[in-house]
Length: 465
Image (cartoon, rainbow, N blue to C red; front, top):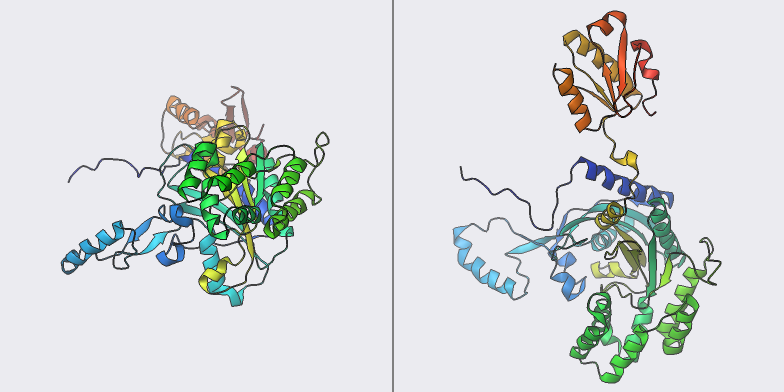
């Protein structure tokens, strides 16, 4: 048998127990808040029909979709056709004989597909959360993987801006519970729409937003260069540069945007929506900065370069760790229209679990108890002794004490080393003497304290001390 080089695909990872526990802590925190706000769970398949996904994420997003090859490509009769079709595939054409399905790129489009398929059976507004992996054929780097989890919450069937208020507060609540200092950035695609109208018409919207979305990565000069390549003139690029250069407090930014775009309907509506969300009661205002809400920032460079956003857009970044966005979302009215069910408004947010994990790990924010495993190890000192230990162990498990019995009879030293390596705090020893007296010895490996008690009282012992 040929030896296989051991490894995993680039951009993917294995998760040992300690990492799984920390990830579960993050996911459970998010899930608890979702349900606190009235959202219900949903899961969709890992793969979707290719036509469901293509054309929904912009040209750059479409290139990152993992396509799945059809079965039966080893049929000799199809070899010549397959070769021709692969050449078409390399030219960017969709060839059904090669691929008809793809791994999901995000959770929003599959959710929209689900709504369209089940429209008649749902109660609106429909509030769902979804926590599943997604896949992107991206270049792996810090905080960016090819397989990663998303945690989404979406509301469909309502135009009310109260939904945006709730979703912004979900972000604030989750990151407060996780102990993370973040900036919740807010902007409106309507403002960007107004900017595009001022700079050559709505047809320039995607060119402008895709370029703006790269500002943090490539800088102003490169953005201007890219805009020039999209046939925007010097004066138009100057207006965009003026827009991107707006700074100041929340109120100062709003006044400058009003001056630049307030005479355009989309600009006026976008500004009003941002003011509505920031002025809604429920979040603490900063007493030192009038009108400022701690953690919330108007970021006019925020573009969220996906085709389907139509209104308010949100993005979350860590204040302490240099990392890409750890959350994002926005309004996407009529997304289900792509699937033949028009006029269903929607808005949603997403949490990037993997990036949140990286930030919390780097900032040492995980509580100590998150990584704890087995609390008590029962020594195995013989057949009769282990039977007595097993019965007591089951009593502790009934009291939610995590415990295990060493798998075989062995010397004390070996069993102690096992407990130390697994960071088990307590060992319970039942030897022949303890078996005869109905007692057991408990040792705390962290403090070295040891005591002997009756087996009948073991279930009342405080293993949390």
